[in-house]
Length: 146
Image 1 (tube, rainbow, N blue to C red):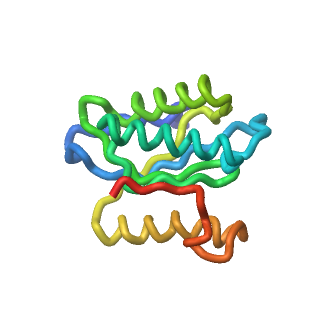
Image 2: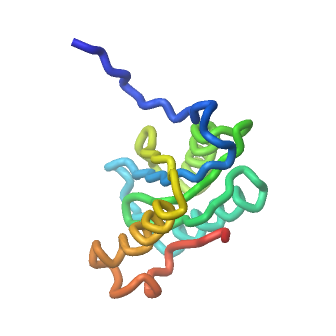
Image 3: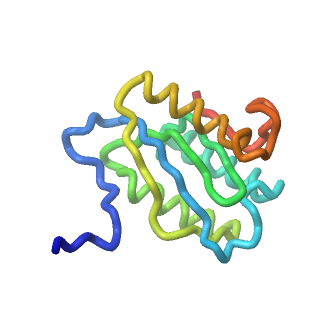
């Protein structure tokens, strides 16, 4: 029987182009009482995403909050790295804003413009599909750096 690692590696392989876009999903821990879309918290998380984008820590194409998780389309420089950058962002938002994040995160590399457009649509429709708003334009808890 094969042993499996307890954690997935989020190191970007060397053959992946620098600046490749990833769909990342980060969940809160079950003990997180306050939804991510609470007005003050949502504003602070969106500002934190914008600060990372403005400082060049990541290139954010789309950042969308849901009550218990968030979806992002992000690109990272090879030097900064995905795992370290996401870990630092989570640590900072936990310390400054009291968010209790689950360990780890989901990531999927976007391999084509078509897949990026489909993933963008999937993320933007997520609040509608979950019955949180009537249409994408009604959802206030998102930001795009493009």
